[in-house]
Amino acid sequence: MDLGLKGKRAIILGGSRGIGFYTAGVLCDEGASVAFCARGAAGVQEAITALSGRGDGVVFGGEADLESGEATRAFCLEALAALGGCDILIHNASAFGQPEGEAGWLRSFQIDVMAGVRAVETCEAALTESEAASITFIGSMASKYYFGRSSPYGPAKGAMRVYANELAQRLGPQRIRANVVSPGAVWFPGGGWDRTKTQSPKFYAAVERAIPLGRLGTADELARAIVFVASPAGSWINAAHIVVDGGQVAAVD
Image (cartoon, rainbow, N blue to C red):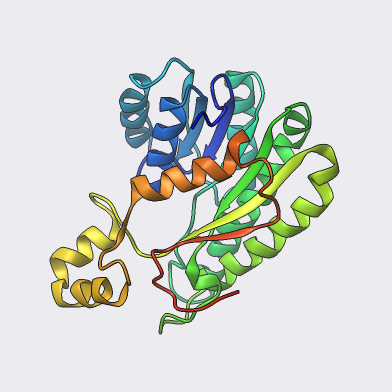
């Protein structure tokens, strides 16, 4: 299937590793130009090097602490200039509910919610000029299911879902779609579940057994789902919360 991404321009908040990096890779493979950010300059450069050999689009990476409104807006402006506009905006970054306590709640709100708000505000004019504009937030099944640990992570992702729906309703008349894709447990090299597999193999195996498909998802599987939703091929998907968890959460919306 042709996803219609050749020549499109995508901005990703959080893309030097994990799901964001794999998503950037799929976009590059499909012919899109990609701009992404991360906190560490070394990680950004490594990702630029890895992505530059894929596809024929532009690859731009910037260093940005998305807890800072100024840094978030500055990156988005740099990305818009580097790509010459924006067709696809993906907010992938998260504080993951860290640290504990009130500081974690504030950090989660700034990164998981406000970074997305600020990116949308900065990129909205450019998205309005696109014929295939989309906004995609990477959520979590913690926004609808209690996994036995209280933290700001689930509530922040829940707020993200409400915000995405409001954007879909408000920006729909301007042909800008907004959706949330929520992963379940996802394994990738160097990620949290990779560490869990090594440090707590019995717990990891128990999680695998609880998933109907008998394994965790991979970052590549998540990336393909995200890219489809964000692409012109998903043009009739709007105001949706799309679960990509292999059936891990035995519940319905």
